[in-house]
Figure 1 (tube, one colour):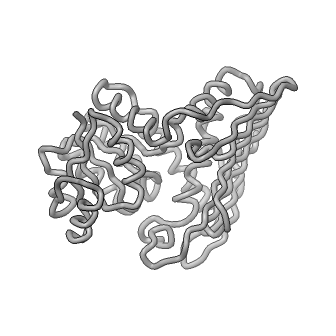
Figure 2 (figure 1 turned 45 degrees about the vertical axis):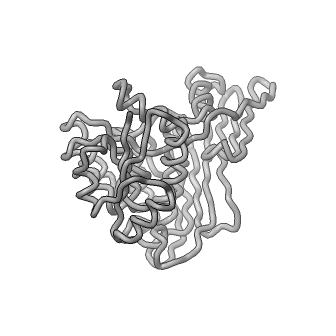
Figure 3 (figure 1 turned 120 degrees about the vertical axis):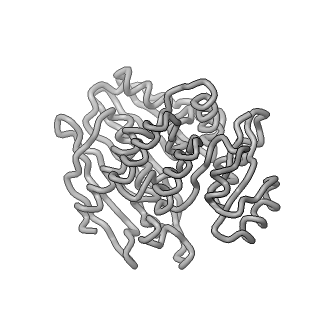
Length: 319
């Protein structure tokens, strides 16, 4: 039985961790902690969590917690991930992994020194759709890649309590949304890009829109776009190569509706998008990592590299 403790009474944990855990008999949520103990107690009652820890430190110290889910704002990822690792707990850390690449490296080094798993919660990476896309590109189905584009936009209402509108907490469109298309393009190209240019729209100290051009080997350009002031949800990924083209509409959460098509050597194919949700697939992988010693698919050097691109885009955009 994998026993998970929740750091933070977050909005995402019920979908990202609790729902998939509820479908298994080898995973359980044992406790939750929040800055406000009253909020933590209400959260536990609402979601049927047995125990409420007095604070974050108390949760990490519990004997009935094997893994900590760090669902805190990015500003809390470094401290509480390090403290969880020091307490001998594996960690599933929400994206973006840290406030910057330096923090990310510190976290990864600590996990390595402790000999414990530290996984970044890029749930989309575990779904059948992304697995198929990566396998096809690696096999050369599109030929030599010569162009890429990935975007993610979703309206995020402005609020003083909304972390995405708080720079001090690690907010901004690039951190919360843009990390996904950056990660997807890096994964598919299989290498680290340079940032050629970036343009952002800033309000109250955070970027609400960001566009950037990434340069991969051979001068191949891939564009990234994100926005948290859009009117509708959108998540699209396209790749073009010498043999054809790939397009995935909603690569982030295929379980909510997705279209995955390729046109290779003039033949268009629509690929299956069914299967377990991204969060179920992620938890499957987490269990394999912790109970069977499987190498984590996200985290480690990959997490540091993703933060390095985010840092470079911020710099290029003048933040």
